[in-house]
Image (cartoon, rainbow, N blue to C red; front, side, top):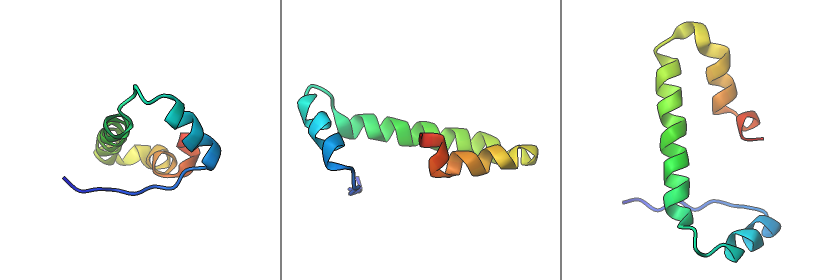
Length: 62
């Protein structure tokens, strides 16, 4: 398995540390897989290009 490093704000990191019962690596893996599945579905339908662009951008995460 490949390791990925990401940057998060210090305040977010502190909140993450408060919830050590959550397997954050597993959680992030599931979120990434879910987003990739959404993108694959949209790639099959060219009429959904604007939605694909939105999902690929950071705007969808807000």
